[in-house]
Image (cartoon, rainbow, N blue to C red; front, side, top):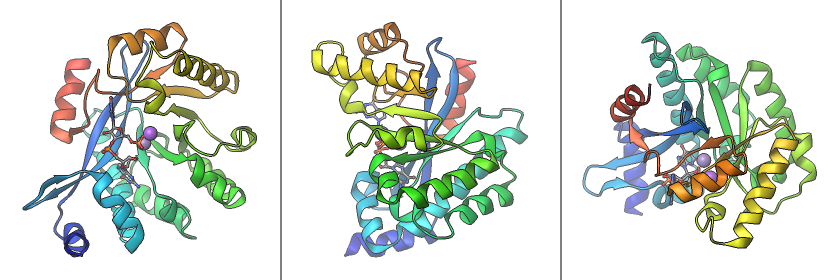
Length: 253
Ligand code: G
Ligand code: G
Ligand code: MN
Ligand code: NA
């Protein structure tokens, strides 16, 4: 397809960009950010990842793209650090196909070594379906990466085919409540129960719990009343290009 050949070009032509969305604690202090991929197409404009990541997965282009994302995220972490403006933590999404590569751990080590980024500032987001697909391989890779100082977040929690048993087997640091459970808070009684239960379970298991897709004050207040620890969403900021993200950080500081 046209989009596919354009995507080949995008990598070579530096049309891919990382945007950054702030993550805050319950005191409204900055605790980190999520890196989100954007494609600035010369004719089509900004193409959202929902439109090209599935295609990249099918064609295998997700492998070089995913590697670029890791490298770019690490370069940015190192740049902030050098500027005396270190970010506490940057979360990076990886696709299943990328994570299953036999050399995935080496790819991450490479991105860290070539940039000089501090591994403790890097967090990798995995999804339930990814980790469950091959728990032994997942465990092996997570343990190796954790020895380097990297942390892990379980993204889109509650939407997958969960087996709660694996939650205690994997070296996770954070659970992200999927935005579909946040959308109708506090009015939806069912979603309220689900959100409360996820918060209580995560806290009991010693995991940080982050609510994503927080768009309203009422959602934030409900989550805060139930002791959610971390927040991300349009209420605070959209994902921003780096320069705008840096400006927002100055305002928050
Ligand atoms: O930013 P946005 O909400 O449009 O992202 C849509 C989807 O694309 C989300 O599921 C998100 O996890 C995914 N996504 C965003 N950036 C990346 C990335 O760098 N790598 C991968 N594999 N997925 C990403
Ligand atoms: O799958 P993942 O959780 O990585 O995707 C995050 C997606 O959620 C990104 O595409 C990001 O742009 C989007 N997002 C971030 N904050 C909000 C929000 O407050 N509301 C909605 N609807 N989407 C959001
Ligand atoms: Mn994510
Ligand atoms: Na998510």
